[in-house]
Amino acid sequence: MNRYIKNLNQDTHIRKGKKMESNSYDDPNTIEGCSVPVRANRKSKPDPTVVNIGGIRVGSSEVVVIAGPCSVENHEQLMETAKAVKSGGGVILRGGAFKPRSSPYNFQGLGEEGLKLLFEARKETGLPIVTEVMDTRLVELVAEYADILQIGSRNMQNYPLLKEVGMLRKPVLLKRGMMASIEEFLLAAEYILNQGNEQVILCERGIRTFETSTRNTLDLSAVPMLKHVSHLPVIVDPSHGTGHRWMVPPMAKAAVAAGADGLIMEVHYKPEEALCDGQQSLSPDEFSRLMVDLKKIAQAVGRDIYQHE
Ligand code: PEP
Ligand code: MN
Image 1 (cartoon, rainbow, N blue to C red):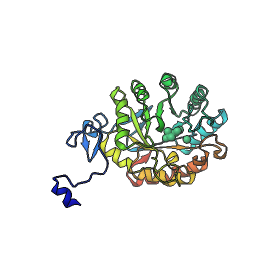
Image 2 (cartoon, protein in one colour):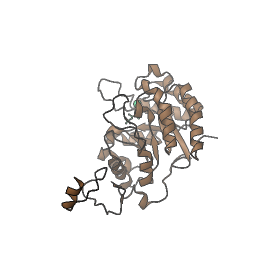
Image 3 (cartoon, protein in one colour):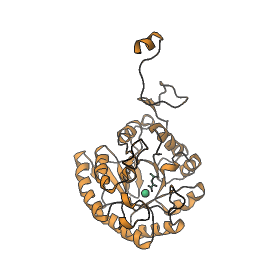
Image 4 (cartoon, helix red, strand yellow):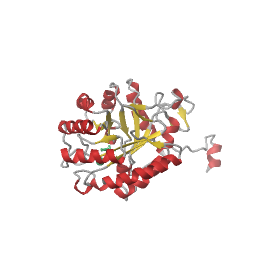
């Protein structure tokens, strides 16, 4: 077959991964068969980007752990979970107020009430907040409460939303779309960078494959690849990446070993009562135990876990 193709004067080298439309392979912004857009490209900025959230530096030698419930449910749930996250060693609190649920009949989040509770938890614990924004009309509101705005997987290619958060000067946590290639992921980041917002954190959260035993297939090879081709910090979500509580610790450890700059994990003070994603949420005890192990893994790869003094 190869000889046949050679006789036709065609290249027999088959590249893994197809490039996007107009960029040619000798494009100066192309690295190893994956076309990397210019602002996200390490070639245009050799130093790694460090996103600073009130002194917590994502993209430095220390691994940053973000944890909290899938969604904000009520005052007690959020405060108790936030305290558990803090005492276990998490340094940023996650929690969804506007939830992108696959079914319209499932709990959609508390909306602005949820943002207010997050703000209160921040005041109580001192932990900065990351929460999702799903709608361009709500960017301003969410930005008033959040320290980091999350763009969820389902919105990774919502270009008006990417442009809107690109106009902010606040950190953005961009989750990989469940069907997005590395190239498409970086192009989505480029939309934000292109508007002048340079504080972008990339998050690998699993992609959809033929596998059904896990919720998604956590693509940990995306971590070294993204860090190789881009200067942006990369974190991993082993909760949505696997869908199983018992798989979160091994995959969190593997993510740190693979070079992730941080983790975002679901923790709930009573996972069995969670309104959303309880099956993949760690209990406070499980979270604390994992944090002890993560420290050893981080140190084994020449890093550490970021801790408040
Ligand atoms: C989340 O982190 O709350 C979430 C909905 O995740 P994803 O967008 O990755 O599905
Ligand atoms: Mn969730």
